[in-house]
Every structure is written in C-alpha cells, then in structure tokens.
Image 1 (spheres, rainbow, N blue to C red):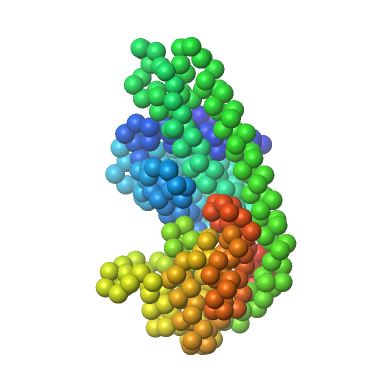
Image 2: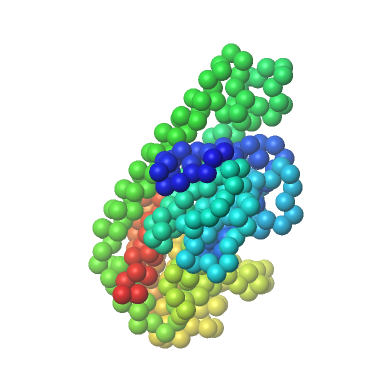
Length: 349
C-alpha cells in the first residue's frame, strides 16, 4: 500500500488502516501497538478499544501494547508526535500515525498528522476510533466464495469477492469510506459544539488548574489513557493516578475498586492541589468517590463527562464539570481531547 500524505483523504487512509487490521485479525494475527510520549497513551487506548469493545455485541479482538514477539500474521502500529518524542518509535511498523516526516517504505501505510499538537492529537484519536468501528464492519461482513478462494475469505470480503459479485469488495470499501466521512463530520460538529457550550467553564478550569500546586488526573479504561495524556499535556505539575497499576490492582483486590483513586487522592493530595477526572458516562463511581475525597481535604476538582454529565454533574463534588452533549463514547473522548488541548494552550500563554 502506498504512503499517504496530507493531500490524500483522511477517510481513505482510515479505511485502508481498518482493512489491513481486519486482514490480520480475520486470520490468526494480532494487533501490536506502540507509541512514544503522548503517543504511548494512544497506544494503550487502541488496545483498550480492541480488547474491551464499547459497543454491546462487538467481540473482543486480540491486541496488546508493544511490538515484541511479533509473528508473521500480526499487524503493527506506531503512534508518535514528532515534536514530543526524543526517539522515534519503530518506523518499520505496518501502520504509522505521525506528524514527523521520514523515509518510510512503500510497504507501510502512514497517516500524516497535522503539525499542530492539538490537531495531530485529535486526528490520531479520531482515526483509530473510526478504524476500530470499520474493522468490525469488515470482519462481520460475509460473502460466498468460490472453491479456489482462501478459506478466510468469508471474514474479509473486501479482499476476496464472491464469484457472483466481483464488485463486493469495492462496494464495501465505498460504504466504509462514506461511514468514515460521516463520522469525521460528526466528530467535528460535536467538538465545536462542546467547546462553544463550555467556554466559561473552560475558563474556570484553567483558573483552578493554573493555581494548583499539583494536578492529579484519573479515569477508567479509555478515559484512563485520556488521563495519562492530559497529565502530559498539562505539564510537570501533573501526574496520572491511573498509571499506578500496582496500587490500583492492590486496592481493587484487597479493598474495593471504588476506592482505587480516592485512596490515592487522600494520601498524596494537599489542599492546594487539583483533581482532573474523566468519565464518558459521568457515572463512574470510583471517579465520583475520588472527587468527594478531594473536596473533603480542600482540593479543587474538574470533571470531564459526556451524555448529560451523569452523577458528576449532580453530586456537588466538582467545582467544574465540562459536559460533551453526545451519546457516542468515541465522540465524547475526542471532544475531551479538544478540551484538554484548549486548557493546556491557555496555561502556556
């Protein structure tokens, strides 16, 4: 597959990324993902998407972080933002999401990200969200193949069309492209609306974070990777409580999962610190409990939620809740990235 550059449609590139992943996962392959800097948080986010599908009825797909132990049937992906990385990720990967120009080979599929960190981040997150959805579309589509077609053709008809429908693969790609374009448009609209609806609250969040001594970010699943990325974006005073797997697993195993963040907050937090918490539903109990614990010791609290804000918007434990009015987990997470980008930009100016 050819290298894609900024002149080519992002939607076309996403379809090709999804197709390549579907080919691997439709056989005995796995998706191996790595990243550097903020791209490492993205790598973990991709793995969560495939291993723990957010859509009911979608099956878990084999994916893990790191390119070690690659087998012939595996497909690899690396994500990096050039200005953010002192060393390159494995540039020999099959799929590369990067804003750094380089000498990639013709066998690779490269999504060229914008040079602006905010736009690059949004493009990358949107790309792997949409690609995940299209991988399931490709894998769930079936066709009747001829006797000479590979046995795996039923799993990815975009590569092996039925004898009685030679255009099946092209039709599926075209439908996938239309779907990708629609989701890109939807994401743009949701992000713009979320930023406009939360202008004053973003201003308030900037004030709270700016005057804080330390900033602790937290969240579950994909939101935990958003918390990790936010800690990187917000600067050296910020750290993600979601990154301490030993502490989280110890508390979850020995006490309860509801306290995995609250226990950390009351132990390391101080009255002049700030919690920045992520929950797409707004109802993650351990996130709400962490905010309540923070308020008890005088900390400030900022929440990022979706849907109608859920419990985060009604529990009185948050000074500010930035709500993305959407019922799509992916669109909410993309808007959360845009909000953190807006906050971090303001903090730097």
